[in-house]
Image (cartoon, rainbow, N blue to C red; front, side):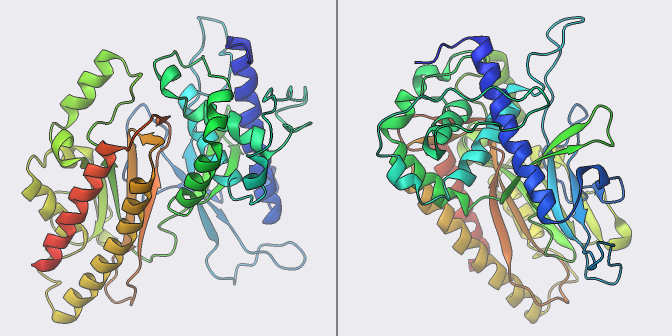
Length: 419
């Protein structure tokens, strides 16, 4: 069993960060982009961010990777560049007045990074055989002095996965422990085969992860998770962030944190979700945004102002552009009905996963929903992705709180369709 000391935890955290950075560098190499070339010209604000916006939080950005010609020059005549979302990793607070933090990132960022790494690793089919092999030590290698590089990987993908899972989602026995204490890998190995299958199925319900990107134009450099941009395929994206679950605090949250979360939105405990924010393509309404493009943004204050399920349902109608007076033609209503059917189909896949899942609990996690707001474009697609994994836990039993939110959302959309 590994000793649960601060030094060991820091070592694990450093190794996990090295995995992400290595993966991010490989991703840049595949697009012929050198890290030093990723300047302000291609890293821009994320205009479609609707959740996680606060004064104390760094906003999301997006990175545009332009197409290049054979001589490695930017092809200005090419189609719009590929865009990826950059989610900021929270930096750790200093340990004291002058002492630097033991690790560069906040423990929540390490947990979310570890979860994304685990989602990527389970795509490896060889894990099914490796999971049945005898347990191996999970001591990570010491990072190179030159930087967080992988100089010697763990014994295999299986032991690496166990390490990642114990970091991101400790079992109930350690759920109440301080953030700097981790359990041994033994408890994770018992059900590792089932966890692999669950995570593999979950990976298609989340935005694809490409690694960690260090934006060196910031001083000091900012670190970001590089993930698939769920809104990249839409001309005028309508976007909604739904915080799902009957409570939004983890079991190890302080009493004050629990009290504050409950006070934010009392309806959360009965409805099972709340609108954190949304962006729509419309005119008029209680919103702020880019009026020239007809884009309006509704922030978290708007979401918490919806104190009845009927008000939330009206907001959902508005998100799917069914309350706009200028969108009343039969063709437009038929388009939106098709989108609602697509949404229900994708929501059903998520519900089926949670019905199968009896290992993972998701606290303060969200559904990201996006669809095309330009009604002149023929598109029935609706993107539905699970996001935000800093507070995942491995606790026995079904995630009843999350399932209740999904069920109520499913019933609400069906009511909208019936009307």
